[in-house]
Every structure is written in C-alpha cells, then in structure tokens.
Length: 336
Image (cartoon, rainbow, N blue to C red; front, side):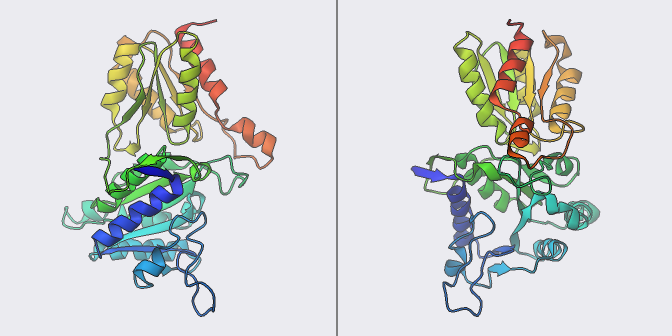
C-alpha cells in the first residue's frame, strides 16, 4: 500500500482494468495526443491528467482521442457498449451534459429495459463536477441529482482516493451505464491506497465516524468537510455519525435510516443546488420512514439556489463549509 492522489488512484484503476480486460477502451478529448508531431507520443491525459500514460501502454486502438463533440463520442460509447466493448468515456465537465443528454438519458439508460433485459450497456461516463476551482458557473455545477433521477443509470460520487479507485474498478466491471462524478478540487487529495486491484460494491454506504448525538450524511467533497466538523464538535462533547453514501443510485437508504433511528437527528450536506437535490431526497426518505425517531427537524446544508459565482470571495461563500455544518449540528442537538 502506498500514498496516492485522487488522480493517481483513478489512473491506476483504469490501468488495472485495461490490463485485465482487453474490451475496456477509453474515449475522450486530449487523452491520446501526439498524432503527427515530433514530441511525446502522449497527451496531457484529459483536462486534469487522470489518463496520462495509458495511451503509450495500450495504444491508439484502445485510447481514442475524440472530436470536440460530446454528442458524437458519448453516442459512440453507448453503441460500443451495446456491441461488446466496455468503454470509459470522459465527458470533460458535467456541465456539458446538456450537449449529450439524449445519448445518456434516452439511449444508454434505457437499452436494457427496452430490450427486455437482453441488451447490456457496460459504459462508464467519467465527468468532472463541483465548485472551488474558479472555473465559473458553466464548469462548476453538481448535477448528480439529474442523473440520479433517471432509471437505468448508476451514479457514483467518490469522496477520497481510496474510494475513487475501488468505485472506478466496480464501475468498469458493471454491466450497466455508470455516471462517475469526480470533484475537480479533490484531484490532489492523497491517502494510502492499496496497490492491488479491488472493487467497492455499489449501494453500500461508508460510515467514516460513529457517534450517538447526530447523523451527518455528506456527498463527495462534502464528506471531508463533515469529518472535520465532526472532529470539532467532538471537542464540545457532541459525537456525530458521518455517512458517505458513495453512490446516489443505488442509494443505501437502510444505512441512513438505521443511523437516524439511533441518533434521532439528521443533517444532510450537499453541494448541489438546493431544489430537487439529494439533500431533499434523503430528507424525504427519512421523514417518511423514520419520522418517529426524529428528536429535531432535519437540517440541510447546501449552497444558495444560484449559479456558481466566478468571483473568488463569492465562490468561497457559495460552497457549504465546515462552519455551516458545525452550526447545523449544534442547532439539531439544541446547543447554544
């Protein structure tokens, strides 16, 4: 086991699966590069370098540069998956989903259902999301609730390098279309990650901290913020359980409900827009199934219902932070 960044963990997962399975291919913009030039026969590895070094090992027949046409290469990935390959297609930013929504929502998500279970679509759509990198409102959204809404898609939001490697391995092996969302601000995060391949099953939440006073459910980058807030609250004598769902579809609602039954209090931290988001969905599930266990109203910690600002001071204020989580937990436990 060695220390790896989020970027390196993703790269290792894709490399391992390409070595194991010759049907795994990569598609995306600027992931091969070097064509017709005298320089290095490799590209940057996508916008944040996660596929760097894979083209020289596996060749241009398995690592394919695509035109700047998301509808074309996401459609090609859907077709390749339906005919026996396992494509991993990189949609550079999740905000560009609007260009290829038909290919994801109306095609690959529905193939298995429309063909009576006889068609499989083992396709991974990798995409970047999230605020905090000064990328402005057209490159910083959290759109995992949109994909979670669509039956037939599996939706993955890893919260650490260890999670990124194991969940990516599972995503590539899965026989269904998977939207795999990678937070831009986490690519340099580091922790110990096993060198050997491993897969983390979908639909099984992770409890990063156990406490009896309140449950915090956090998604993606917000898991780290929630853990920091829980550490601070422990110094005040407030012990929190922190749950990382890992996948929003399937969602491990049982883990969330079991924790709320124990603590009686729930705070949901979600970087997505507050209307029709995961915080609202999780809150509704708990209100419907564990209302009698609640000792206080559910609190949601979310950004305002507004586009992500570009001005650094406004973007920093927009993102839910440790202090916001701290205040929400203190409110539900009745602390002054």
